[in-house]
Picture 1 (cartoon, protein in one colour):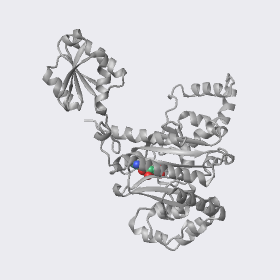
Picture 2 (spheres, rainbow, N blue to C red; picture 1 turned 90 degrees about the vertical axis):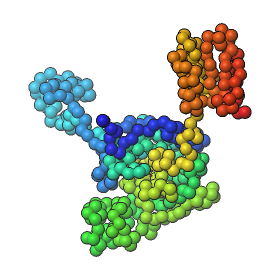
Picture 3 (cartoon, protein in one colour; picture 1 turned 45 degrees about the vertical axis):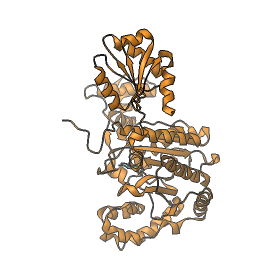
Length: 465
Ligand code: AMP
């Protein structure tokens, strides 16, 4: 038997009803905050993630699904390459001399054509910022964008951690002149999240808040970290020993229990914030207090991606166990520049939708809309009539499930009950002739004969009685 690949899973009904419930609620909230949807490709050039998320992060160094895309076939390789050159550079390659000249100047292009390195997106912020640059979205001023979709990381699977998982995320990004750096945007994002979790009925969440400073602070902080690590790093895990040299901030990502007491003693970023960063962080907190969103300061929180600056945050949820981070995010003021774009400060978050669904108290049954009516054709030739009737009802937004004329009445009743339909509607020859149908309420047992034209109102009206 062929099974779903480790770390991936099928989402089946009725659970998918919960996913739809979450996504519909989320879209409502985004609408109220004037966010608009963006959909970026599932795969991108590998270097996009290497340059934005960071080479030394767990995501880029260990967890990405990367492959070399197939170029041309062996036999026609060079010929097709030349076709590409002609097309790209708008010139014609006619003789050998031209070919040799070209082969010198176009080695890079050839490499690209032979097979570029592609990666399944491990997160969506890099793709959004790439799209921002590619489509010059700064011309629109401040962009408030959201996305919903799958992400891929080769992590060790466990409850709440998958290799294909789903994120719901949002970004506020734009040129500084549009106010993209303002602490008001950070607070707006955090207040939106509090609203969203409350709206979904997710209780007992905690907002953990930190500022990881700007490149200014980071240089001094990294220096201090290196110094503090020097005498102790020999006792730490191999990853930490490497990080201490290449990117000491990433030491805080370490999950090795034996390393934790050492990490506890390291200097914290909060002591290294410069005046503008400190002020920015204070303003975020002031607005949060004014709107009544509670938070905890946590200066160990540095998030597992390099692109964050200033505000960084996580919402955790008690009931989720080891994988208790339900969402995370922060500011990424230098990200656009790091992938070749203009200055475009931004802030965003990503919710783990899988974990959000796990944390929901509601059951899938509670949010699933059961059929309003089961239309039961009775006897030969009645499938045609039942199909017409079902079509009429569905046009009136009645949820209809449709039976089969070969079923005996008893089987139709059993099927209708199993589906949880509120009504069963019998379509037999007599009913069709009379233009009135037997409608039975499966909850109360009441049965009435209803003229065709009144069926939609009768069926829907009962819902509220
Ligand atoms: P990150 O992009 O690492 O900041 O993650 C944001 C959120 O996505 C986390 O708080 C989790 O809820 C969720 N998440 C990250 N990785 C996984 C995974 N492998 N499986 C399920 N959810 C994940």
